[in-house]
Image (cartoon, rainbow, N blue to C red; front, side):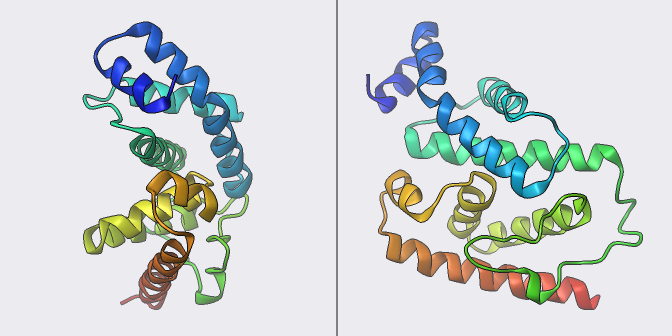
Length: 190
């Protein structure tokens, strides 16, 4: 059955469709979680744990996904929130004390690669910059979430968002430029 039809049936209360939807998209969610955990060096646990936490968060949300594109947007957002919440709970950053922002050189193609193991402060800076980007242009922020937190490549995002790779790459450059500038301002203390 088509993912969009499963989503519609699940939204209508069909528990069987909800279970089949989770099965159908589990591999994609697991790949996204593995990508994110490898990139961030997070100690949340295994990708399976993150997938289940994402699923629980999404299942508990008042409004579920409308279609496949919306599903991946919600999943990427949930992964971002879970990982950031985890970092905050660990208490590695106390009201900005001793925090060093990402440098300009640390924002690279094909994705933002500055988040290496143990750099929780950088994740919190990126999350704050991403929140500012969302206020500036929500679609650019969603693109960053799908690419960075969701681990989707441009080919996958083109299919999910029904847009050309070329336009997505152009928007990625815009988003990266915004984050580059925003993080450099944070670094200089302004």
